[in-house]
Image (cartoon, rainbow, N blue to C red; front, side, top):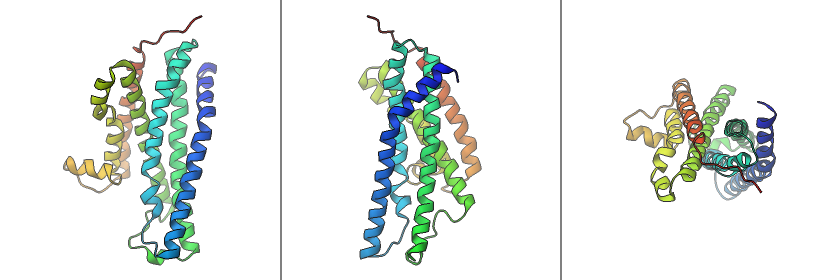
Length: 241
């Protein structure tokens, strides 16, 4: 990264960190409240973090992809930054965010496991806990890092589609635009979405981390290349006067 791309990355980080920080504070507090209420008035039978802490972060990263490309890239180009530098700077912001969100998602499982252990709530679980070892935590982290990147790539493509096309055409193309996210979810057989698409395609439900990573990485590279080719053609004009 050169000085210009780092400036783009730094600007995006500075403007988004407060929003991301509040999001994680709220989601951790809501999780703590839900677990406390269930433990007080009933029995904790399943992982609350698995039920409420996995889907929302993905769509949050999707929105970051839209914002970085749809809102900020034209602004940077208008200020004289090349499309190449603006896009590199945007990905310099998006990739750490995807990894950071995956880290906080994994940390949520660690916090929940500690909570269940300290308060003796493991006996009420009706199925094995998802994270039982460091290896399980590493697998969760890798999976969610790549899934988050898939959603960010989809968000970036969504921003380009709505910028270049009429809103109706862009909306009709949403299934194609969302393909990077759904492809990565299917590769990892994530809960709900990934398993659902796998069954539609006649694939087995069992997730394989290595296979998922091998399938996800090319999908992300293709999505990034397509985004670059489309961004090069964006009709952005420098604002003067």
